[in-house]
Amino acid sequence: MPTPTPSADPVSTHVAEIARAFSRITYLSTRARQHERLMTLVGLPLDRAAVAVLQQIAESEPLRSGEIAARLSVEASHITRQVQQLERTGYVARIPDPEDRRAQRIRLTAPGREAVGRIREANRRGMQMALSDWSPEDLGQLATLFHRMVDDFVAHAEDDFLALAEDDVAVQPSV
Image (tube, rainbow, N blue to C red; front, top):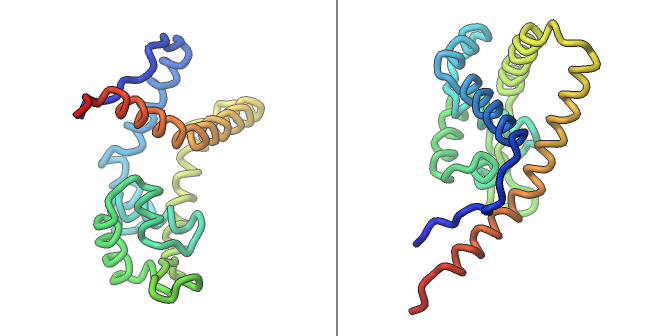
């Protein structure tokens, strides 16, 4: 199956620089050493995947495992393993889904909420230190633009995926 190609329209230099900066931010925030330092600072023995799962649950708990997998763009089996480990260590608990008693949702326990709070606070403090020379106006503008960018990514993610899928179907050889 051929890989769909993105639009042939040229990318503006501003968009290219934003993509480059975004790539650098992603790299910096996902480095293993950075994660280890964060976990040492907050005193938690969690790997990066566990932290991602906890943060997703904290955003809008309780969630089904499939919802967590979709939000993190990973296979459900990865989430199942993470949830089992987090449940064994007391950070999450399973509860019946009120909409479907056959299904279960995952919620944070008190230690899970505390862990997420410590991680968030450490991240905020690190960001505050890194941006300490920025003016309040610049920080406000950056926050507004980041939220706008994320909202636009979310709004266009499904449309872009569908457009790429349609392009892929269009280039399929006829049988």
